[in-house]
Image (cartoon, rainbow, N blue to C red):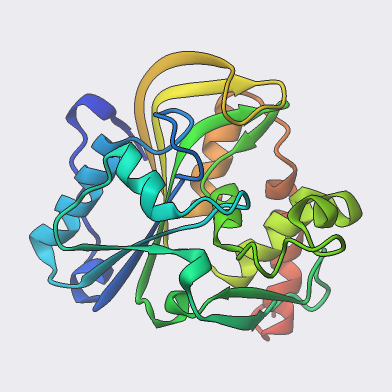
Length: 249
C-alpha cells in the first residue's frame, strides 16, 4: 500500500485494537533528521492512530552499536510522544531466541530484548534508504534490536558477523527469528548513498509505504530495480520453513 505522505493518517488493523502492548521499532540509530532516520511526523501519525482505537502500552525501542543512549537520540529527534514509553535496547533484559529456520543462513540463535516477546504487535518504521545499490528498509531496521554488549566483541561484532556470513544472511535470519506484523517505509524523502547510511543524495518523494514487512520492502526495492539480497534469501527460505512446520503439503 502506497499513500501520500502529506495526508497520511494511520488506520490501525483490528489486531492493534485488541493488543495490550505494542512495540514500535523506529530507525533512530543516529541523531540526524529524516531521511537518515524515521521522521517525527510519520511516527506521530502512527502513534496517534493507535491511540485512537486502543489503550495499549506503546513502547519505542531502539539501540545502536556506537553505545550512544537511545533516550538522548530520541530527544534530539523530537520523539517526545505522550503516553509512549521510550526504551533502549542496551538497558533491556536479554533472552536468547532460537532461529526457526531448519538451516540458518548465519546464526541459530539471537540475543534480543525480552520486552519484544511480551508485545502483541510489532511495527518497524524505517526511512527509504538505498545503500550501495541495495535497499535498506523495514527488515534491515531490525538490526538495531541486537544488543551491542552481546555483539561488540572481536568475533561477535556486527561487522564481524557480516564479514563471515554476509549481512544479508544475518538480516534474513533476524526476519524469521522475530517476525514483525507491520512494516512502514517513511518515504517522505529518499536517501541514496554509495556506502554511508548517514549521508548521500536526498530526493523528495512524498510517499508512505505500508504492509507486511517482506512485501513492503520488496515493493520498495522493485520500484527502483534494486538488488536487495536479504529479500532473495527470505524468499528462498520460506518454502523450507513451511515444510518443516508441516505446512508445505
